[in-house]
Length: 421
Image (cartoon, rainbow, N blue to C red; front, side, top):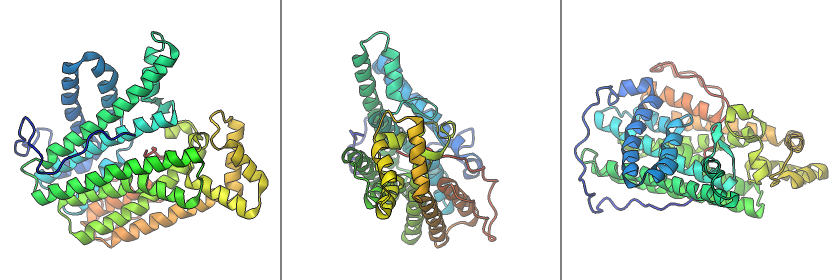
């Protein structure tokens, strides 16, 4: 994953077209907080539609081939989306911290759209590094470009073009995300202190994401399957990037105090780690029709997941040579057969690794809710935030607090999980 653009200081030179005042209320009512409450993904999708329409027009002016092969794919991938976890976390954190005016609503939606674009960057690059053929039930971007040119270019050249296209597409998504945050931070309607805090969180988020991804691929290359290392990588690439930082962004945009923001960060870190551990389980045990990607991808790629690290540690402690033999043979085998993957599942069950990870997920989920309860939040939105964290961790949804009903019925938690990388 390559980061090619870095947001400058808030005192950077103004763009060619100076930012204007906060945009007026839209006819569809998207600037009204309660309207967004009723359909957060829909509001973010509208924001992305408007943003990407302008970006695609710019790309078509540059070159139609580039626009069709790269920009259009970035736009389609982003709009197709997953469950919009990060966007929803930004929104409900903002609302739980009391954010509701037009400036805050617009800023939250623009930040959420930028997060969806940086997620596109992460997933497109991740699929390339993993050589994954599908994502969200469709061909991965590099595979799609390779197939497009498979009939007109030699096979090696088509594969190289697909890889190069994925690198550039991820970079373009990251550039667009940075552009949107940069415009937002220069918006004169945004308080300067808020803009400064927003910039700091955004800078931190991007670096943590890249660091976590590198630990993942470096551990994969050297077969570093230790429990401590697996947890460190999971914390950086998922706990922080997927949950903690989006919650922090929402709190910053709402102008929340230090204590409330800190408790939200702690809640997000616990829930985010649980999310990654759930994703590790789903990669091996969940139905591919639910996850949108082939089963056992982490095993075939030799990823240093916490689940596999625990299984190896427990088998070693028990002197279970047959179990260690299965793991030694299977982990990192791209040509792993369904029967061999089933043997890995048996080892994960027999060593108790699956049960231990499930137990840890439950403990982290409860810890997340305890931290959330210590923050000073608006009751109704806080209930929505609790339900969202339960959905993310794949744990039973908590009952609404007696001091405030849910604003609207929360959607049922989806099964499976979307890879955060």
